[in-house]
Image (spheres, rainbow, N blue to C red):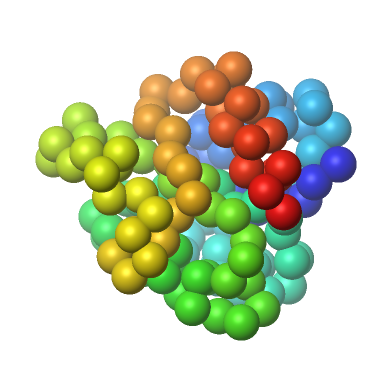
Length: 129
C-alpha cells in the first residue's frame, strides 16, 4: 500500500492514526516537529503527508505545507491537513484549503478524528497520485 508520513507533535494522535491506517495496510512514518517532518519528506518519499497545523508554533503546519509544495521533489505529494484550529480561532478551512500560496493543502480533517472520515480522505487523496 502507500507510505504515509504523519507530522504531529501529539503522540496519542499519531498512534491513533497509525492504528487506523496500518489496519488498511499502509506503511506509517512519523515526525514530531515541522523540521523533522521536512527532513523525512526528503528521506522517505511519502505518497501522502498528514500534517498538523499547530506544532512548535500556532501556524507551523502552514509553513511546512508551503515548503513541501515549493520543493521540486515533493510538490506533487498530497497533503492532508489535520486541525483543531477552527475551534481555537474560527478559521474556515473549506475556504482556505487549496490556496497555492497561503495554504497549499489538498484536503483537511478536523480533530477530534473520526476513523472512517480519515480513511475516506486518505483513500481519496491516494487515488490522485
